[in-house]
Structure formats: C-alpha cells, structure tokens
Image (cartoon, rainbow, N blue to C red; front, side, top):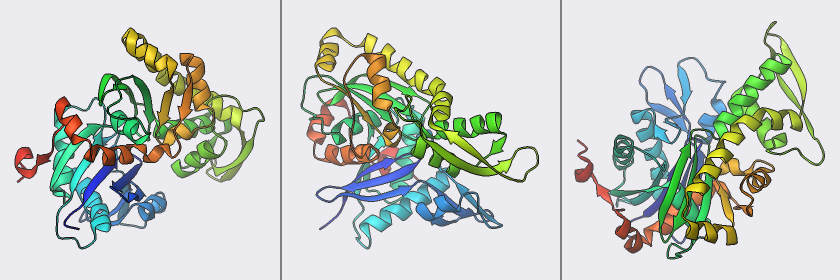
Length: 342
C-alpha cells in the first residue's frame, strides 16, 4: 500500500476516520488534555474526555472544535495529527483526505479547516458539506436524481439538506444540537431541583431517560451532584417527562427550520421526498422518539439511520470514489500550495 485515503468527520463531539475497504478505523471524542504552560497536548480522545472535571493542577481539558468550527488552531492541529498518525502508523506517504464541514461554512472557516488538516499531515484535502456526506453514508446513491431529505444532528449543530444527484438543492444549519441538550438539562436541574451536575452527568441523563416525545411508560433516574445553596452532596429523582419537557423548546426550533426548508423545496423534489422518507443521522438522532417528533411535524415517514454518528465519516469515504461526480459541482482537492500554508 503506497498511501492512505481517509474519510474524516471532525465534529464537535467526536472525530471519526474511515478508510476505503476497511470502514471506520477510529472513533474518538474530540477532546484534548494539554499542559497550560506549554499548550502541548498530553492526551487526546477518550482519555482526555474522561479527565474533564477531574483535571490535575496545570492541566486543562478542551474541545478544539466548537459548533463544527476550529476554536483553537494549535490544539486542533495537534489532536488531528495524533489521530491521523494512529491510523496510518508508520506509513511514509501522506494521506489524501475528504473531510466534512458545516453546510453553511464561510470561506474563512473553510480555509482554516483546510489549513489544520494539511498541517496535521494530509497531502491534499477536499471539503464536503456534512449533510451530503451523511446522505452518502446512509446509503443514498450519489447518482440518484430523486430528492432525499437529510437531517444530521451532531454535537455542535444540526445540518438539514435536500440532496439530489450528488448535490444539495436546499440547506440550513441550526446552532442547536447534542451539547445544547446537555446544557439545557444542567440548567433545568438547577432551576427545578437546586441540583448542580456536570456535563458528563447531563449527557448520561440524556442518553438514559432523555426523549423527544413522552414515553409510553415513564422511566426515572437518580441524578447525583451537589446542592446549589449549601454545596453539599445531593441526589434527585428525575423522570423522562422532566427531560422531555425541558428539551421541547430546542427541538421545536429544529423542526420549525425543517418545515420552513421543506416549504421552499421545489414541487418535484417535494414529491420525491413525500414518496420516500426523511433520514435522521448524527449521534443526537438516537434520542428516543426523535423520529416520531419529526414525523408529526413534517407529516412524512422518518427513519433513524443505524449508527448515525458514523454516517458522515462513511459518506466522506464513499465520496473518495465518487470524485468524478462531485467534480461537476466544484468539489476538488486542495494542497498546501493552494491554501498557502507557511
């Protein structure tokens, strides 16, 4: 093997890398633990993720990517280099990378992302919008002329798109996703139960009893934290309906954007979508009842794609073999010279 081709999903919550013929080879939280004095990373991925809130003196845990955008160039570059080296090992040839980007990324954001990936060790990079990658990863044929409605709900933002024949006819980005759900749960428990919890506990509550519509049988969970007044340890019994009610305002914003986008879609593509289904991808799409919520809002069939958190990376990997199609829509590989990296 003379080199690697990589499909990269550099998301707010996770970094997923796929390799043609091998599938997903890396799936790690996009967290780094670094020395505050030197800003050199000590750990990246799962180990840094579990260290959050437990950092020793002089060490800080951070997410170099926020809402799909690079928030700390140096840390993002170090983290990605660490992950790419884990995949390609001692291969001396630099990989060619297809990477996902937010649907409405600006030129500055695209340039920054290209620069980070190339500086991390890529030979050349092609950026493709996340919902388009998600559609490919969900099994949509890039040559298919009929319309497909894709909703990709990740950790930092939610991308929505109508995809047809390897391109997007409509797209929207909502700055609400899994991380916002966690923060809303933290806020809710403080207001209702006077209980302070960490982000990891909020995420566990969301995954265990969280729901987008009321469950047929209500479930409960004990949340542990500390009292907001006394600072002493405290527990509270949380119900699934509590979490459902606290997430409704955020979920309503996403469904409202989906309805508005569907109303702008051409009649022919709308007809294709009505006769097909809406695809829900992304890690946060696994929230209980989210497919029912979208089905009620759009009056359409909605399907949650299995392993939705891996769809974008798999789709980026598929795009590597479909560049002859994507070339027609302006997608191309950029090198160090194109981006003018020093």
